[in-house]
Length: 337
Ligand SMILES: Nc1ncnc2c1ncn2[C@@H]1O[C@H](COP(=O)(O)OP(=O)(O)OP(=O)(O)O)[C@@H](O)[C@H]1O
Ligand SMILES: [Mg+2]
Image 1 (cartoon, rainbow, N blue to C red):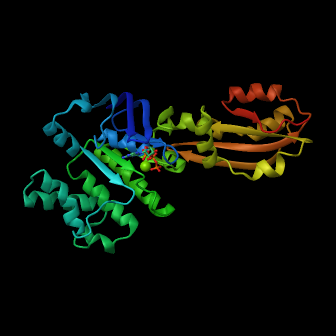
Image 2: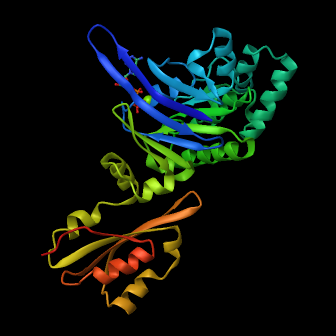
Image 3: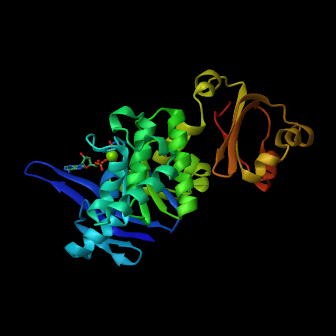
């Protein structure tokens, strides 16, 4: 649906030269909720702005639904933009217009009749659950409600793709979850492909099926969300995943105790359903002291980890073989002597 090939974007002036997007290859399938994660300045916003041609790449190809959008004429570009909705961190609503009028704006621009505009805007208000706020001004709305208006406005022209630039970063955790649920509903019910950028791995974990990690303008890793959470390859990806999954407590308190071996078991989907610890105790004579455990939902499956302390003399060879068969990854966190 969206395919980027060797895309580059540099910002230059007399003194500076910033490579904001570097050699990016990316593929988003229809109906994906595709997350792009990275720290500040990684190039996320530039990348998403390339997708609706608010920025033009210096080189490379961007294909959306088979059309190379870097080659569009002015008229084609106008039409293309209508098919791409976008929502922003700070909502970008017009303060002098009511909620209904804000949603009508893109329809006005496309030349819909007034009756059509009102009809469509009312449908959208219903979709985002704000029917009672039609005649209210944005200043009278909460952050979550403002973002709902932003979403309704972005969907006005029935786009195929919805781009979200840090759409939940200005919201508290509960409101974030509500907006994420709304995005999932839109993705499922309206079959809209969503590309969202965020610096929060929990947003990725909750709603995305695929993810790309950006650093210094480059996409350093991309793939299935579950795969990336379970087996992050790049150091930066590992840091993002670790922030979301692992707490710091074990590190300081237990890592220094060399009389004990500290091991971490990372388990996924199927392996969360077997009595793993019991099997290790009964069949392999492991004597574990549980330090920390966490299981998280990643979309419809679970992933988790368990950190246990065992005798430093315990030989892990057989346990390793058993865990491998169960699809559980074992890591020794401290090298006990
Ligand atoms: N219009 C511009 N002119 C000059 N430099 C720019 C412009 N837009 C972005 N940059 C630079 O490009 C780099 C990438 O910026 P970008 O906004 O894409 O990062 P980001 O990942 O979205 O960061 P954040 O998480 O802070 O929003 C930064 O170094 C930024 O300063
Ligand atoms: Mg940004």
